[in-house]
Image 1: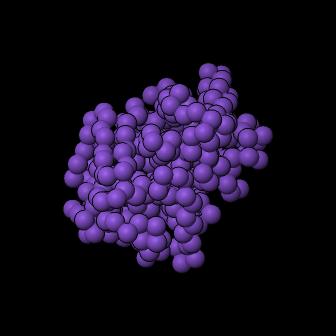
Image 2: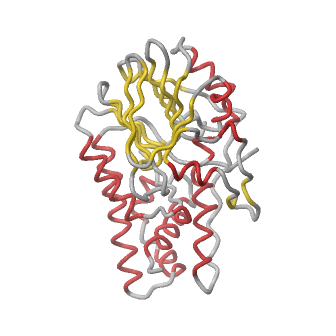
Image 3: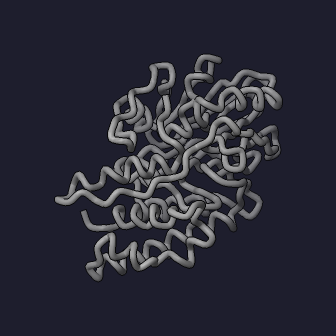
Length: 314
């Protein structure tokens, strides 16, 4: 089962739902490039204290994955797509000889949860915010005119939490925090305090515009607020694992936050002036930002439309 082509595919699928509350259907978003699983390569980056990042950006495997290895078990953050489990499983086995005890879903999108069933069958307990279980346990639009079927029961989180939670194996402690609606309404960020490693899920994209799931209560304002929370937690030595993109630091997260603020301010000014979505797109108001943040020729328009739909009065 293919849930979406990539994280931006999720943005397309759910931003399209915004028109339900308006009289006119919003223009369709430009399509994102298709994900290519056949050539996916998993790259492993040690983060210290027996914690490893499996890169989902150059390796083209969906969302980034983090594994913290203890003496009696491991804690895994996100599972990428099911289609890359055949490469991700041996990559994890190369650095961890202990079973994965816990798998944390940072949110419900398929590029982070598609592999859940694989690790559940290996004995991992899937953990997520309450809203992740709720959204996974229902049919949702798939962006192609149909619906995403409910995942198999074994892929659903079986332990959920409302605000904060701590998971431990011998030698590793993961602190889980729920963020108010930002990328979705079920975002979790995970802090491995001993190693000063922060896993943000899709609250942070280190090298491109983010996907924002407006239909799941996400929005630009929430993303800005979440970046402020993460920046308060991080210091100059924090290793930050973004949902997508290369390993980052506080300076990169600051750049991301500043970009979001610039987009928000420009779009809100246009909305206040009464400009329509198509008028704002035609004005190309993100041209200077696109050079750094647009990962494909249509990414700037996609993000501008999503930002407009999340910021306009409802």
